[in-house]
Image (cartoon, rainbow, N blue to C red; front, side, top):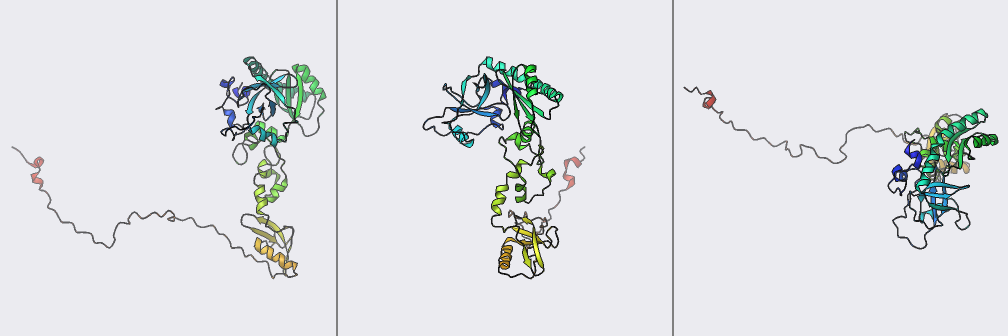
Length: 385
């Protein structure tokens, strides 16, 4: 069994101490505490964030005033029994996380942190984790035998081995009442079925995206926002489902990353539905180059016929003239063609020539012919008797 399976990404050698320099602080579930080096002022919050398997997190109340640090293993309240989790956030930053998830600390009923996990708790927790993979494979066989249109993607055992959460994927509504009875008889534990989406499943499995990097859902995204084709239209992308879909089969999450910049850049652009009227006939919008500020128009509504690029400023002028009842003579291309520059060497850093100190007009001094040494004077050439 991989050691990361035991500790949910933490270092196995630090089961009894806070993992301040552990790999879990660089994982997708870690939150950078930008308030940790600031002086503490006022009352400190007694609520901590605890993380479990995959992306499951929850907030718990530290009723016993335990000295908890990020990475501490704690026993927390569950229904029923208790669970083992890892402290992922403490301090004043918890207030901002509660506000982010719209949780009112005064009215919300937080579960309790019982204690720091003891060695007996950790050993039992590790035993329950060892059962997860076998339980997932067995549950898949049972669901197939019951002919249920679903896929069980993962199993998470509770720390006290009294409950297990079965994560499944299904396109339609599934009646799994019979499945729960069979699973309860097979594993002798309390069963909870929890449905996840295709994005969560892709983040759990992982992989490499079309950009060549690790999937965002498996590296840092924990809260998924709905993605629509409207974001692709704002960015002038081709509505090709094969190119816009990710490995989960849904629209790529990265379509939402830059859509706000595109929307802000197109505030000064005229509406695309407006038709430009000329003496040659009407022209319809085809596409927009947001970066260059150019809109392309065609004489046919559904086809690219006589397509002509027009700057946005000129489009505004034509629309203003059309409102006055005036039509321009012809929609001509007044955008200069941007031909790529030929790559050539240029002295861009101001380097001087290596021969800058040489005076080409200066006459070189003549060298005087020195008498050559007499070879006979060489002792090697003398014949000694």
